[in-house]
Amino acid sequence: MANSIGEENWRILCSLLPRSWEQQARPSGAVARLRGFASPEALLRTVLLHVARGYSLRETVVHAKAAGLASVSDVALLKGVRRSGEWLRQLCCGLLRENQLALPVAPAKRRVRVVDATLVKEPGPTGSQWRLHYSLQLPSMICDFLDITPVEGEGNGESFRRFRLSPEDLLLGDAGYCAPAGIEYASQSGAQVLVRVNPQNLPLLTPRGQKWALLPRLRRLSAGRAGQWKVSVRGPQRTVPGRICALRKSEESIRKAQRRLQRRATRNGVTLPSETLEYAQYVIVFTTLPPAEGKVREVLQWYRVRWQIELVFKRLKSLLQFGHLPKYDESSSRAWLYGKLLAALLAQKLARVSTLSPWGYLLPGESIPQ
Image (tube, rainbow, N blue to C red; front, side, top):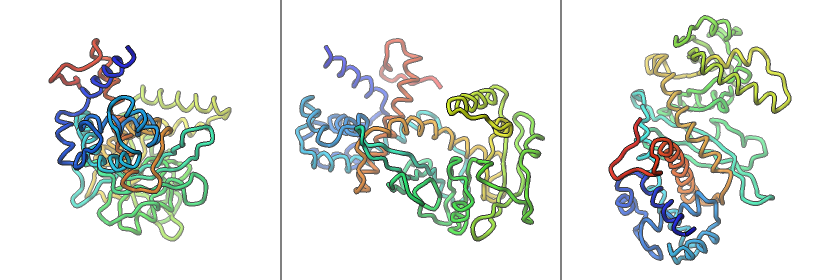
């Protein structure tokens, strides 16, 4: 009975994958050598055992053999994971397209990159912790940078300084990247940044170098009205000009944001400053993108895209706490990341299906209402 339930669950999961997902395996190079695996489906299922379930290579091959999926060594499985990277990326792109992620028109000759970092803990009570830094291009979801560092130590935190940058880059970062040193580094590389503002970490100046107060400007905004102001940020060596783009949230969004902050403060036993609750009323972004390349609403739309992907990242980050991260092989680490992202997207789609489909799966040809 348990085995039949497992098979049924796998069939339901397969129904959530993009159409022609099996046919994509061969042109992507995933099954150029299908040695030891019965089919592309068996390969994907084995790879997800390793990536999504968090089994080590050795544990995975034992489970795969017991399930009749594959008879391979851990070395052969590692090669299969490496070859599957592009296939997994294509499946992720297919699921994102199904979510109808609306992308603004990218500024001419700009390469839009979402940058992020997350902690990964190896399994077991004494498992090591690592920080995974990565960059995904939009809309292709190509992982163009990946690095793994220890959690502790100077220079191992979130920063634009960890990435290889070029003048055509537009970097979308969360508040963890809102620091003068990283913004200065990106500017010196010729790249443009778009980051969520952390008011405590980003002292703002007027274009003439005088202190610039943010809250009085924000208070002038009504719900749904966007505003922008020219400012500058003083880095370690030079001042970087840019813009603050902001929007007041709806009253319901404000209540949710403030409740979240208050619950966290209560949990940590601290008192929230009144300014923190007031800042929660707004979405505030700093960007160095010139106005000619992005009006205020376009800047805010790009941040909305960053936030939509962040919702997937949040699931990804919860999944990333478990699993044997390949730390010394870039191609394996990249495939591992795509596998985690695929698992997060499938979890997101499964949650949507469960609320709409009383029988627990999609009928052939059926799509999820948006």
